[in-house]
Image 1 (cartoon, rainbow, N blue to C red):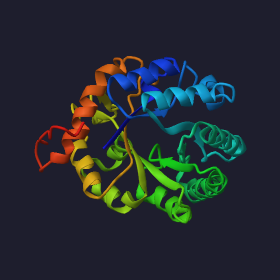
Image 2 (image 1 turned 90 degrees about the vertical axis):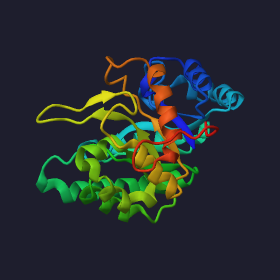
Image 3 (image 1 turned 30 degrees about the vertical axis):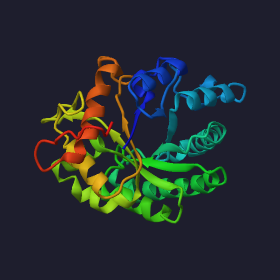
Length: 285
């Protein structure tokens, strides 16, 4: 089982500090989303042409894989589409330089019911073009299940448009699915599981009335993570489980070191899920 964490949980730290954290917890991958307080891909100095060789060398020395490069590219807004495509291409170039296999992009928002069809078409077409560019560099384009693109209605047309690309896939953010489907998550999963290439793991106490969900440590919230991971493993999922600890957006959260042990234990123990409490199987870590 391949475990990673997003640098969103420690985005103010240096590249060396982030790699050291992964090594300390025996986590084999890092998902890049913020380093040294910089969120823009083009501002990540450790991945610049003059520093790329040293950064690749550090990763190789510590046996840590850079598994995905998180961008801010979202394709719902027609006025910002050109800039989003440029950002996507720059990120793909960085991936090629650094040996990162994939970038993350968004569909994001449906501004009104009347705009649904046009927005979905715009998102699908933009990803289609970006996949063609990325294929030249051996990079995949992964659409995150996020925002208004977390339902069958919005995602399926995009998937159908792009399933022809072997370098297209989905990042399944289980919390975004939970907001829409809750314990009926299989209504989503059974349709999209062939396209899930990467999984964001986080947990929360579900929203009640008009309140927002409350983040918790992994395994302490309402999301049926053990059942979800068990199903993925049973169905042959071979991608990364990535802890997305959103401290950058929610600074009140504790440091990522507090979240990693529970994440590691829960993912590893989920292979023993039997409909109740998962039984930890030694030796899997």
